[in-house]
Structure formats: C-alpha cells, structure tokens
Image (tube, rainbow over all chains, first blue to last red; front, side, top):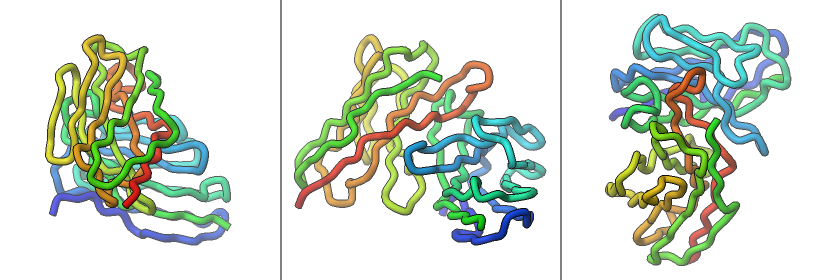
Length: 116
Length: 113
C-alpha cells in the first residue's frame, strides 16, 4: 500500500532531550515536507526537501533540523525540544518537485508530540 | 503567499450534493488549485487539484472559474464519512514558496443523516 509512515504516533518528552521523528515513504517520491499543526494557526511548513541531499527551510524552521540521505526517508530532529514545540506534526510527500507540478501530496497519520 | 478565502462552515444532508466555494483572487498563472480534507485525528487527505480546466475523480469534481479567481469543490452525494475540514490551497512555484502548500483555516463540513 502506498503510504507515508511516521513514527512514533505519540511522544511525551522532557525539555532539552533530543528526539527524532521518522518519516518514510514507499512511493519513490522526490518531494518531502514537514508540517506542524496548532489550534488557531493551522498547518505550517517547517522544512522541505526537493530531492536527496537538498533541503530548505519552510515558514517555522527554528528549533528543528532535517536530513535527506535517502529518497524514502526524511527524519525531523529536535536537538533541544522546548514546550512551544508541543504540536501535531505531519510529514508529506509528492511525486513532483513540489505542488506546482500536477501531483497531489500524501500525508502521514501524524505524530502528537508533548514537551514538558 | 497567495491567499484563499473559504466559508468557516457549511452543512449538508446525507446523499445531497455539496458545493464548497473558494476565492483566490490573487492566483498567479502557474499556481495549481489543490483541495485537501482532514478528518479528526488524521492527516490531510488529497481530494483533487487542477490548473485551468474542470477536473473529475472518484472522490469529487473541481469547477474552476474562467478567470481562475474562484473554484468550487463538488461532492456529488455527501455521506457521513465526508464530514471533515476542507482546505482549498494554492501550490506556488515561485522563489521560497516553491512547492509549498499554504493551509488556511478551511471549511468545516457537517453532514446530517
């Protein structure tokens, strides 16, 4: 089944403890992206990658890192999490180089992160 | 970022058609119009997208105005499973917005049995 898989689904951690949220897609998509969703603010893009070894900042990149060493994986790294990073996170992928090409995005099921 | 305007909420009865409007008066010639929906506790789900011509797929139809400043998502027969937040989004090509989907607040669709 074609899908974007995020792990873990739920995570509670403490301030300052490094964590990684994994994202993997099995559709050979070039484009991958991370979003966070907060009440009243909607979904906002954190980082995106147009291909292997190519990443760039979205609207809210502060406090996050990403890497794209393989086409299928796009992990989100929080080096020193803080409570304001408590949010619902979504990974997404697309066949083309972003939504300007005629392809839709596939989203993962989300990771609910709580930083205490 | 190009903006879209949608009603905050709409209601429908089961098995009736639903027309969800979206205004995007600042759309540029290369922007695609995307529609996604999000059910509670789930990730956004792709519904349909188009550029200039009307589009149909198994989920819905997309009607795009001739001047492209507005579009309408059409659910031909609403079911209870269609109750969700529907997002109309412009995918942009230029500069730092390349490929980004900018989500607004969306339209909350309620479907009554």
